[in-house]
Length: 243
Ligand SMILES: [Fe+2]
Image (cartoon, rainbow, N blue to C red; front, side, top):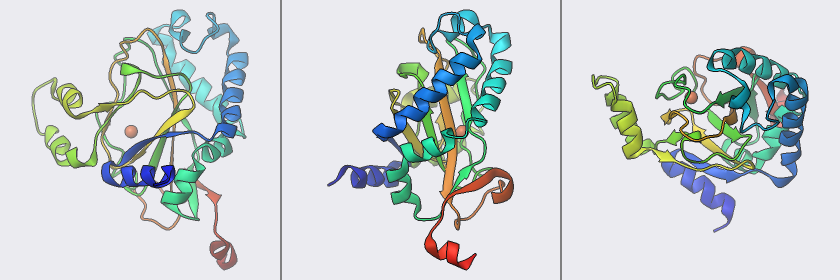
C-alpha cells in the first residue's frame, strides 16, 4: 500500500494522523522563524526558539504571542506554504475545492506554564468536516506535544464533562491519550470532532506550534461561516466555471 493511502486509512479509523511535511515547503517555515527572530530580536536573548522562556515571563508571554501572531499573519507566503506542506494529504482527503482558515494561530507553551486551553474538541463551533493542521516549529517530544484521542473514545470523553473529580481530564488523557513526538518538519492532522488535550509542558524547552483549519467548500459549516472565517485556497474547474 502506498504511504498516502495508508495515512488516509489511518485517519479514517482514528481521526488523526502524523505526517511528514513536503520537503520543499520547509523553506517557508524557516523563513517565518528567521523573520520572527529578526522582528522580535530583543525577546530572543538566548537566540533559540526552544529557550525563549529564559528571557520571557509568564506575565509577558500572551501579549508577545498576540504580537507574533499579528506579525505572522502579515507574512503572505506562510498560508500558501502551510497548504503546500500538507497538500497531498489534504487533496486526497478534502477534494478539489478547499478553503483555509483566514487567521493562522500560534501557541507558545513555555515549560511549567499552567495556562493552556482545556481538554476539548473544536466542534460544534467548528464543523465536523474541518481538519486541523498542527505544525510545530521546534522538535516536540513528550509533554511538549498534545494528547490526541482516537475517535472511539469520544463517548467516554463526552461523559467526563458530567463528572466531578478535579483530575478526571488529566487521568483520562494519561490513560487514553496518544502523546506523539512530532519533529520540526512533521505535522499532526486531526478532525475538529476529535478531542485533544494540552498537558503542562514538563520539558526544558518551549513549544512553538501553528494550527490552522481546512475544509471542503461544499461540506456543512459549524458556527464559523465562510466569509468571516475562511478563504478559498484551491478551486475546481467546475466551481470556477459556475461562478
Ligand atoms: Fe482545539
